[in-house]
Length: 383
Image (tube, rainbow, N blue to C red; front, side):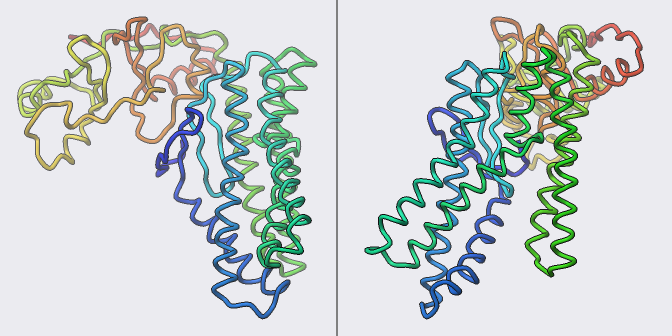
């Protein structure tokens, strides 16, 4: 999840988050419509009318982005793929799946749901323009026409064949179906995404340099994002190939040092912490079920150290609880390198803590496997 995203509720049971950069999207669309498109097409109206209609159209466009991502997620849940959240941000939206589809056909269904929804919204908006053109205010129908065209363009653009766009997922599903090799398909889709990103950067640069159109900066930004995201996906594909079927239980720290939620903070700092060498601790209840995470930084920033550990600990995210038989490559791609996630709690079937995995553990195992070195024996914290 992008840092500084805020939860705004659930839709069909799926958590929806908004990133602060979405404000820039709303501002840009509003300024584009109110400052140039609407005044040029329908002169003579008040500035307030242009800006109010432009702002409303920007909000509706963001809602159409949410519908696009929600379509992905609803189909995923229907096909047995849990969805962690949807996040809307500057360049659109992201549906975060907790696991990958089990077969190419499922991936194809999940992927196509988004562009088809955007296409349907676009066509519906354009049909409304035709139906309302004789009865509605031309400024309103004009903004509605822009929404229709924008959604059609969104659907078409998303189908370009390069990861992480929907077209890249379609390419991945096709390559996976043809070869039977998921990792090779992921690498192929990622390489296509790198090329696509470079093409967009080049086209944007040409537009800025030769036509003096600053709209080319948007293409450059998109291309830069696509190329970087494709590089990450290519790196992940390579890492998954190296890790193979390695499970979390083979690399976790067993019987780690824990802190109980009802322990007194001052007693912990004065009597227990001096004997420990760690910077981060899993916080458990009296049944040894993990409920939070406590770091030295949390203690340092605490204005008042009175009370119990549970009052200072940060809640443990759902995705930070994993099973020992989870594959390391899946954990790396879906549950780590997230803001504020200091460690992963490994739990048994009853939810009790049996080990932890940190970002350092994951980096170490990746480095050793890439060098062809054997895995180290999983460490055990001293009591």
